[in-house]
Image (cartoon, rainbow, N blue to C red; front, side):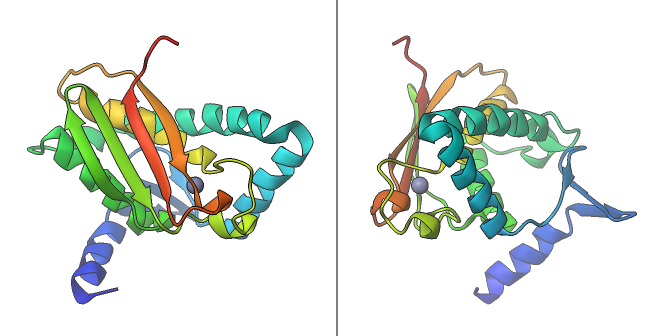
Length: 186
Ligand SMILES: [Zn+2]
């Protein structure tokens, strides 16, 4: 990590509040450091029991409610004061990187109709599947739909987004690619 990034990372860490063994940031939600091996094992065991579609459904529900909780926190909107929606979306991807989710680059941004494409070369889940998965596996990223919707909602812009993972390291692609776009009826 370059010096600039180290400095930004320190600033990021200073946004956490620590009290009595509990860590909180941006929202009233509680955070903790968790091993990616544990998270990966958890996902793979869920897949073994109810299959990839079932596992996706579980993560979709849980991740969306996680995204919702984050965006309802008392300091969420204040964090993005003075930024355009595009700047907010790019900011949140960088923020996620400091949280340990790996680099996330916005490679395409369109405001109307709203469409964002994000590329991630090193998702934590990737190495567990060794490129052999039969489909994308970054289920947890669906939670970003709620976060992006909340970022738009700061300007009272109501967006209903759908999430598609078009490329995934888990199935052998060189990077993961996530598309967030306006939901269609079909
Ligand atoms: Zn992926």
